[in-house]
Structure formats: C-alpha cells, structure tokens
Image 1 (tube, rainbow, N blue to C red):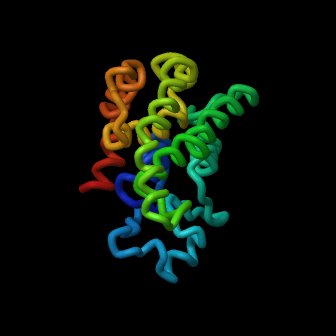
Image 2: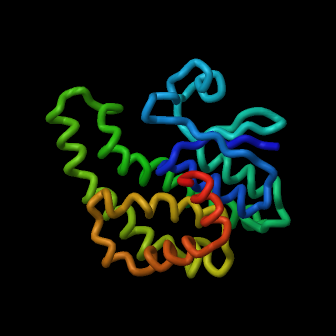
Image 3: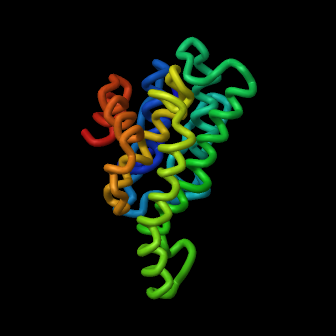
Length: 205
C-alpha cells in the first residue's frame, strides 16, 4: 500500500491520476495548504521540502512529479504508462521535466511570487508576466511537443496526466485558450477518462 500526499489544485493531481491508471493499491492523504499543514513538523518529516506530491512506498519516500510518474510507470509495466524503448522513455522524461522545471515555474510566478522576491513591486511585475510566459510555454507544446492525440503520439503515457494537470491552470493564468486547440482537445479527452474522474473525486469530493 502506497500513500500519496496531495493538495487540491496542485501538480500532485498528475501522480494521483497515474496511480489510478496503474491500478495501484494506494491511499490519498490531503495536505491542507490553507492551514499551512505543509510546514508542520509532521509533514516535514515526510517531505522536508514542504511541498506536494510525496509518495510513501515500501522502499522509501519519493518527491518531485517526474520521479514519481517514472516510478509508477516502471512499477506497473502492465499498465503501459511509459515507452519500453530507452530513448522514447527519455523523450517522455524530457517532456515531463520541461513541465516541472519551466512551465510550473512560469505559473508559480503568479501565486508564489514571494519565493523569488520580497518587494511588492517585484512580485507584481512577475504576476504581470505570467500570461506571456505561460502562453509561450503552451505555444511550444501546441505546435511542437504534442505529437498526436496523446503527448507521445498514439499511445497514452505518464506525460498525459501531467499535461492535463498544468492545463487546468491556464485560464487563471490569463492564457487565451482559443490559440491552443490541440492542447484543449487533449484536456477534454483526459477529463473523460475513468482514472482522471477517480482522482478528481478523491481530491475534490
């Protein structure tokens, strides 16, 4: 039995969907950001970074979405959530790391500007930049990185719940969704999948 620590409306949704996709035996435990539970001694003992997701396994604790997604895919090969070919798997990891290191950070400059600056003017400047940077990120995904109906082409993979999760932030980030027809079609099809519905029900009630 694994335990996934999550907060609603965060990137932890991607790992949650992947666990449901894999048919894994897991429980989902909410971390209440409204009460700053992520900074409590109890949670910091699980994840000293004070963030989600964290996945407790029988071999230890994993953090960071790309790592957790890769672990799920390789732990449940029968679910076929990642390419078996090493180069294709590296391409999937490359996409997920782009979402983690670039797209998520671009988004975080809006709600989490205090991670990088203290001055209100600097924080406001970062917030004003978010629509531009997120649009640029998703233009690249729309026109160059989304290979087919799914991120990797014809086959569903661990890239797809991650893209779905970050796409849910676009409207709030001020991105014009009409310029992203392929991304939004992907989002619609992801929303219809049983694993997505299961994870959302467990997160949002």
